Length: 308
Image 1 (tube, rainbow, N blue to C red):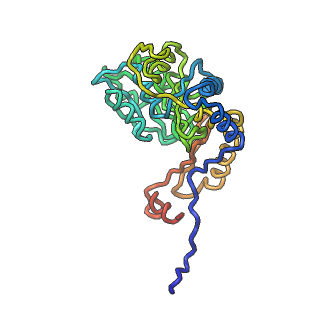
Image 2 (cartoon, rainbow, N blue to C red):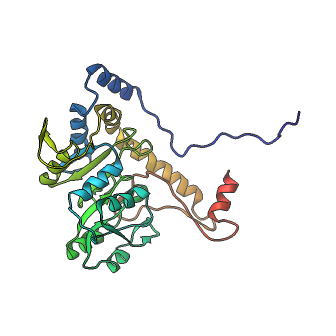
Image 3 (cartoon, rainbow, N blue to C red):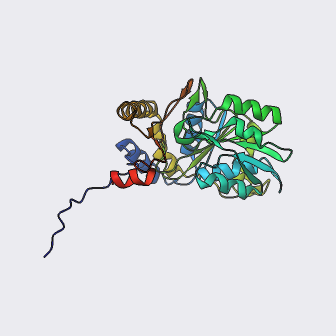
């Protein structure tokens, strides 16, 4: 028998989902209640998340992609309308734009925060542009002061892809409060319900329309007011997420401490740039992402191979 002498090392997971006994107890309570579809815990989650981000209204849906789709749906976009967004994002951002019937127009990113560059966004605005859709990548807000000014000047609706930015801020203004905010509660996010999404707004009429859209167009049972869909979140999903809200500020503080430790250890290495929190921003560190150069000795694939 030939024995391979090389050690077998355990894989390091990108994300380790750890939920406490408080989550187990709340899920069990829902199971025993007999009401496992959309119910009072969904409403409670909406209210507590609205308080977290300082929004007047939050509407829960079944996932983050649905949040983006529903956000664009209420803007009544037409074929030929354009939505400016980042090319450096998860495909759900693009899929939602395609689903709306509009055309995606990409604007390049700022390499300091990996978010859409306001100068690049301004360069692609034209008479077909209807929506500005910045992505708050990795847990840090895009430059919403400048992007907000651009949207106001060009009369554009603002839809924020805040899937990775729960509680991220610029000053005292949170992600999801410059326009329509779209959040994901997928399993790997800072706050999770396994699958789920949240839409935020300060406009009551929009929130009302989303509540109809998610429930087949019904305000009351079998009283249809508009064409809708099944975008509902369940109380089981809400029960997974709700207990996490109380300790979320502590989780973010821990993430910030870990990011600082990584930055302190890695800063100054040739060919590698660590991520930074830009002035005035509150980074929630959904991911810690480094930038490596094109040097043959330290390119991305070579670094991955060496670390593996």
